[in-house]
Length: 113
Image (cartoon, rainbow, N blue to C red; front, side):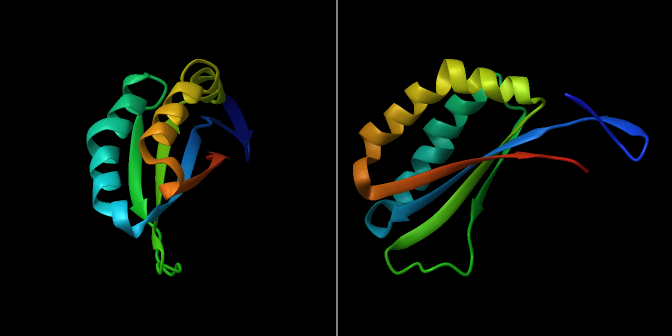
């Protein structure tokens, strides 16, 4: 999507953010799975150009750590295509693998500058 801001045109990128609380008992395994399986599967969809794996600080870690993975899409349409074509299957795989040992929420952000 091309946006205009202060009389300048630019391509608006989308960040798809997945924040996950991971139970302490599976923390290392979950991180390994993210790095070796899930993130490569997300990137292989072709809808995202890059990602960042982050650890949230200043959180209550008594039951486990909280992480965010931020995937960058070149456009809102790329993100929508991911949601239509890939998201349900990838979420199902994660749920089958980790059950209730993780809890996630998803947000979509538009880069405006």
